[in-house]
Amino acid sequence: MGLLISKTSANLLLFSFFSQKRIPLDSKQFEIMVSRTGRLFQRYNSKGYRQVVGCIPYRYRKTNQSSSVEDIEVLVVSSQKSQAMMFPKGGWEMDESKEVAARRETLEEAGVDGKVQKMLGKWNYKSKRHGIMHEGYMFPLLVTKQLDIWPEKNLRERRWVCV
Image (cartoon, rainbow, N blue to C red; front, side):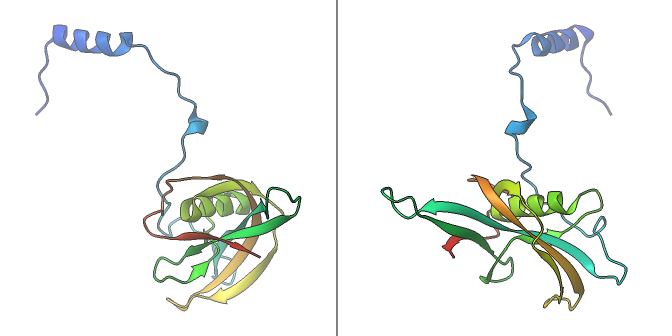
């Protein structure tokens, strides 16, 4: 069953909609506010290990205003299941490069964005929860933007710590 509307009413509605002034939207102003979920598009290596990527987000902070010395701080996030702190990481999906996936995971979990740098290394580990083997890749990320609202804000705590 459809909505009945007269031709005159429809024309009036469409005219009023299209005659309003529009503000052009810049897609760069919007951030994705929903985390990717599921394993359908996850990558696995030849041994069947799930491939994950992550970042070590960092920034420089001056120790005080009169000094030129800068401290390095790294950002850690809480686990979804506990208050254990860790670096943001997650699944590398088929439609992404390692760097793009690492940046996305960091934005989703920690609410920061920045410049992904040269890969630090690769490691294999067994997940505690499911006992599944993973192959992980980590990248440093120089933080240039910290969001107030991000996809997993209600699931995780984030904390800057000095190194």
